[in-house]
Image (tube, rainbow, N blue to C red; front, side):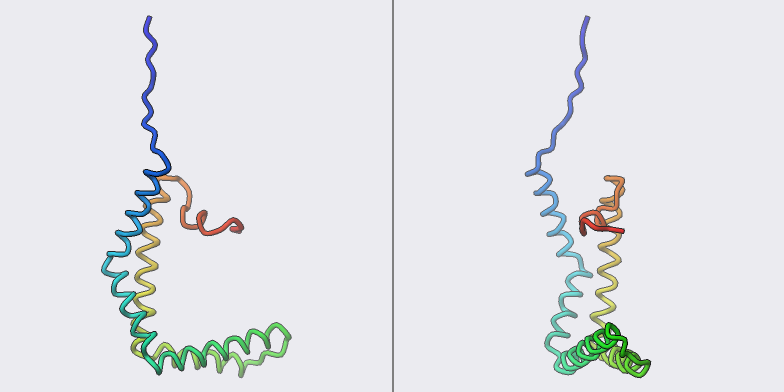
Length: 132
């Protein structure tokens, strides 16, 4: 009588870590990621974009504070929206936002490939403990 045993190939944590590192390195080499980094640098070095970002952030923060205290008006909201539109009209910012969106879509595709293997939304699960 013979007893057959299953051979299970064990993958250790170090191997998984290495694969994850390789995945990260590969993502960093994607053309869309490289283009995103270039666009980000343009925005960071664009004085008009930086001024518009600061103005938008200040207006948005003021609006949020006013909303929390019940003092926000439609005019306040309109000012925030106008500042955002002006920010998005700056060529370097528009390019940056477009590439950011493309990168997010590509990362979502990669997340789906990983998640399919795990039968769980890897990106959502890895993102935090308190998902609704």
